Amino acid sequence: RCNEEAASRQYHCVCGNVSHPEPCEGPVGRASVRNRYIDRQPRPADADWKFWRMNLAVKMGGYWFSTTANGECTNVSAAPCHWRVLQDKRRIRSECLLHRLGEAIAARNASCFKTCAQPK
Image (cartoon, rainbow, N blue to C red; front, top):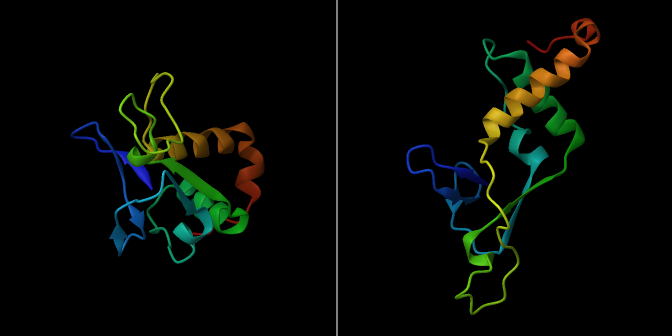
C-alpha cells in the first residue's frame, strides 16, 4: 500500500500487512481490497460511510495497485522499468478520497440509503 506522508509530502510504500510490514520489492504493488477489511469492524461512533466502505470492500473484493520507486523509469534507470510520471497534477490521500466518494454516493440517492439497514 502506498500513501503520501503528511509531514514530508513524500510517497511511501509498505508491503506485507498492517501488523507485519515489509519492504516493497516489486515494480508495482498489489493489495487485496477484501483482505484489508475482512477482519475489521468500524467503531460505533464512526461515520456511516466507513461501514459502507468496509462492507462493500468485503462483498466486492478487487485489488488496489500502487507503483513503487524501484519500478519507476528514470533517466538513470539501468534495470527494466514499468512506469513513469507524465504529469503530477494533484495528490490525494486515500482516506480523503474514500470519505468524499462515500458522501457523494450516499447523497446521490439519500432516501434510498436511509431505507437500508445500518450496520451500527
